[in-house]
Length: 325
Ligand code: A3P
Image (cartoon, rainbow, N blue to C red; front, side, top):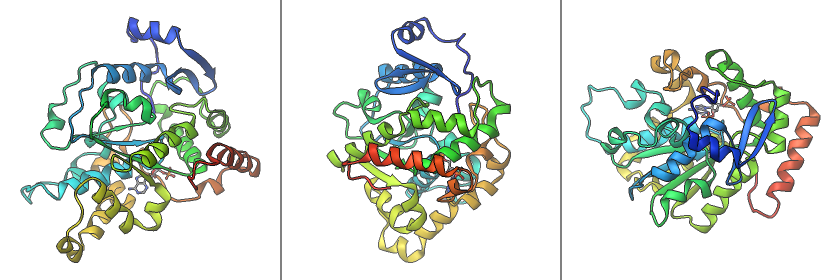
């Protein structure tokens, strides 16, 4: 969800850039197309600030996704994996108990660089590696990362569940933010299917990382929300290995894999006080990031026509890519 969609604080540079781009106004709001991806105007400013000013470190980790694909879960798991190596005072809270996963792993374009070309990243540097997140497609993310060995993890989710999750999320947060546009299931369906959707087209976003993971599996890991639900142990071990912090035999015997999965479970995270009452820096309620977390909830909301249309889009757009949903 984008805070402050008004344009009155856009920089002159962003206004000039926007005037040169392909624009679209649909029922979800005003969007512009930059490097093949659709953004709300204020997010574009964050993207450009990031591309111009971000200085990567070799150990940086980026968690990427299309909105509502399991970003919060991936952030929590990654934080918990790295927390194992820190010799912290046991009387201190686990970071996940005192902050929301989005506070611990900020978005590059929607938090850090949204209204600031030179954000202070020193707090993040105190814990190596730095972990950031993004919804930008891979080619846009990679601009400042030329020749950098940093690692990228992408989480992808079934397009129908993404739609339903996005719709619920927007409805929950509409009252709290100054958002233009109408977010009914129908308008969001049209927007997602047309491709003119924030961070869309969905298929381009997913395929950029899918292809990246095939070309450079050492640096780009492609995960699926559904796989994490079905075989969480196997998937978290895969993630840990990719991030260079595999579970030792001793940890496995101690049951540390299950402990992390339990800590990061939707049930546990959503019951923590910080997630019941807190808000993100963008004033979004932490609680709104946790809903059902089920595979196939779309069946409770979409009509057969909607289901059919999305299935056809997925078949056509992902044909020949090797990616199966
Ligand atoms: P639903 O709306 O289908 O319940 P994102 O984190 O990318 O914003 O995606 C949000 C979706 O992930 C929501 O899906 C939310 O319930 C689910 N989710 C959040 N935390 C989760 C967790 N720890 N485990 C599983 N699913 C989680």
